Image (tube, rainbow, N blue to C red; front, side, top):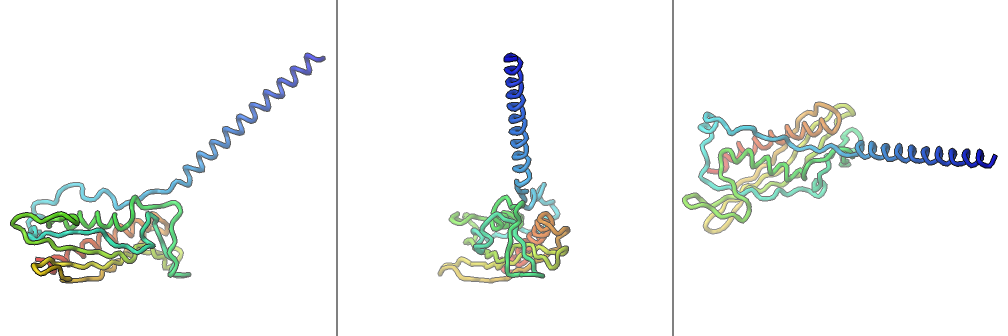
Length: 224
């Protein structure tokens, strides 16, 4: 009888241990799944140009002999993060909210500066702040950019746009110092294909590309 009781006790303990192990594994598996679910999607503006401009395009865009410095883009404190942000104009347009499961690969100002260099570098010699000019070329001008709005704006629960608003200022370098030569406010909006973060990212990417083209066209008239 004693031996039988011991066997039952050992079997019970073994079953209990196995049950605890199975429960622990299930908990760990559930935690792993939860971590995967909350990991945010990371977005940028895509790979950019996949090949150099064609000869015909280069012929239409004669390179400027004026050097251009593109400084860091100034952004409002609300945009100084990697959050993909949105507003609900139909309830409270004054409140800027971040998506919990979506973010940019870097701050929007950095992404826009990268895109701006890709666009302007096709027909200009670009410099970073602190870099000197080259022999035979005129003194570098500076393009200053202030980013004021970069968000997905919901006009209704199922309709939204990507809204970009910024101000660009051209600073010309002359013998007697630097002067503000020209300034322009740029406001671009593009429809979002879906009422979610992915749709907002698509709309903001399209708005950014349109804004970069507008800056390029403006500089052709403001800069020799």
